[in-house]
Image 1 (tube, rainbow, N blue to C red):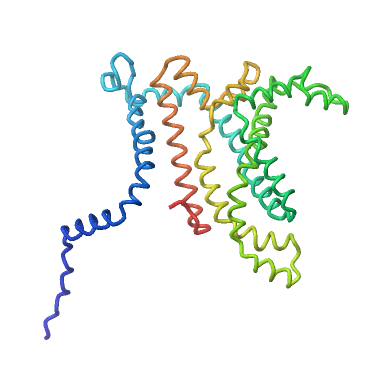
Image 2 (spheres, rainbow, N blue to C red; image 1 turned 90 degrees about the vertical axis):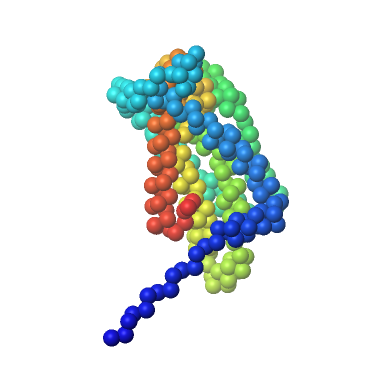
Length: 319
């Protein structure tokens, strides 16, 4: 019986040759590595370096003892937050505002970009873009002041307009039921125009020959938008949706604090403002760090899950 031949062994990788090849590549393309070096250093210093401070979430941090000198307490502050009476209120308010904003704020830039893309008059198109982009450059402090002034029940222009049509003045800023709507609609008004830029860039890559062929075949404008323009920006929509869901708990505290008052606290108290008050106002650094770490962990989990779903459904994902 013929003896079976064993498979030939795979060639052994020569590490010296690999290192030599890597050094040669680095030497030949050093300009590209030099170009990426500032971004790498920025992330290393300002994004990954401060992560060392996460340790205080597991310690009873005492500034005079430093991070390493402070005693370990494990998951004490996480358990304290989860068992607190305000945990579910903070979670509900944060999710309520962010999901509300995602439901309204995500499709509007797409609709605006498609509408601007259909404008044929050059000056009118530029004018529309300028008007819709302009609110993005209003600072948060100025925006907060505008909302408080415009929505004042006695002197605000909004209540004056409501009075003209026979509606009694509404205390928008002191009624908890109105807080989420005021916050979300003002945020959408400020960011919709700016958010449409990336969709307009994607629409600029659509081949005009597709529209010409569709016109010859008798397709209407709405049919061309639905079957040509919209599919062209679907990958961009998926990527932005993943990023938005991944930042579902990462809402800033500045605007909330500017609009917050004791009367609307039941709707305006969110995780971001809670971390700010506990950490910077009350000086409970470890407790605030634990809540902030929980917030970041939820965002990371959401990003991974939504990215996995998007990759399975649409073959478009971040990784």
